[in-house]
Length: 386
Image (tube, rainbow, N blue to C red; front, side, top):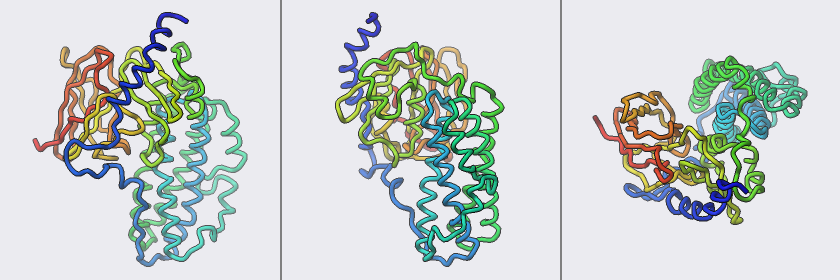
């Protein structure tokens, strides 16, 4: 065992204890109401009793199996090792958006006294119709290696989304149920944006197709080798694990896993007492920030499976400026994840000012990536009017 490995092994237990103490963000608040900010995300959406027309019923009956296949395609892809973070995050986002929409539409159908299975979906099973993949195409996706599967997924999902957009446009034009029409409008906006993102990933070439996305095998993982495998994280580097877990819908987060982000390593542990440390990239540190208006909590090391912020799935503008050089490192519009955080990969060895703007309000915080004990979880960003 080399010196680095031996050192990492010895400090793993202590690091895990620190991670659980400093980064166990369980949603407890320092100010404001005591309700968990993520609680509402797991509740079933309300079902309207407004009368539905034929177009509304057809929209729900056809969109449910359409969404189900998108989730299936995403599950197939996410089972591959070595996906690029961008592609993995996209597939997770598609699952996170469409799974609750399936539940909503099935609830409507039940409320309308319509059998969800009554529609004739046979025409959709052959591929092409509304962008659905044929069984043979799904089999090809499942059997392909990571690079080929990524390309097939992106190409297939673009057509799949285009079919969904067409179905949603028909509902907007002909539907009479207000909530169904609103969902159709949201599908049009979201899936058109994802189509553009997927087209950009395809245009990016081999790197976007998974060829450069394999885990960093030169960086040893210290600890129980079965832990990551049992949680479908084997072979993934710290960047991929972080981006997969941090962008996951709160309702789908593993309840038996703790993953704490530290500047030098990602500490992973489960409820069976197993532990593992995955090295962080040599040139970057992952910092998570949770802007808030009235409710926050104390945090030091960001916990990917338990940390919850107040503003979930909200548009924000984020700027990071290097204190020493004045260089603008980050300047972009982002959306907070379902856990209320935005995640930023920042260069090592800097002190910077982080600014978040939302709904006419601004918050700032200092951030450092110089030391092994620097915080990776910023929860002091209270948004105030400027």
